[in-house]
Length: 276
Image (spheres, rainbow, N blue to C red):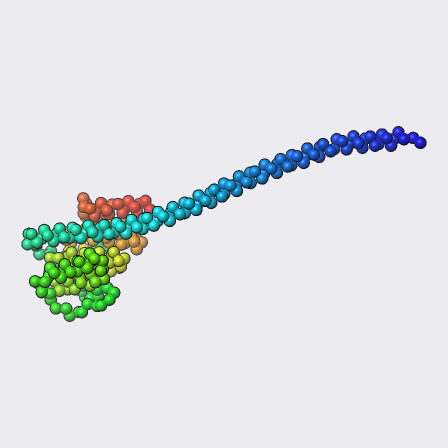
């Protein structure tokens, strides 16, 4: 029996198998290496994503802290400005008493156009003094004239309420003072503190009207610059940005060199940065 051909066939099959096996093993090793690189790359991506997530959480916490600090700073600024106004008012009163004071300037009709006061709401047509002291007990419409001998005491009582933080009672007392002592040399101060009490309690509509009354009825008062500045702040707070800008620019033009003008310019710079 001839066995040569089968042996040759078996030998060829063995050779082919010997060649194919190393080739298949090498291909598998390459694939495993590629998979290992992909797993390492994916692991790096996951690690970076986790790091970014932690950093975002940290930044969010820092932003919240900064926001809280800004709110606290804003409240502190209001308190400091109110305290400064109180001190300046006391100094003006002492100076006026030493010099026997001077009568309040005569009423000047408000300009109809071309004035920063034109953007403020005017007082009621029937009277510039509201018969409501804000929330709470209304003010009687038939109040008798005040006793001249008690004028200083009545003003001091209203001012002490304001200083102690009793803003609603202070507003009521100041409005009564303005009704009973309309010709007082303290009328412009009383009108300003009315607006300030509304501003501090964020009753912006009433505060804006009270500041407007001061600007219109007491144009020569030293409180006018501050009333315009606060009006600009209120207009900004209520997002009337064009009106706020006009009012603040009026302060810098009409009261240049004053503290109010400097604060108005700072607010204008802030609005510029905010693109308001």
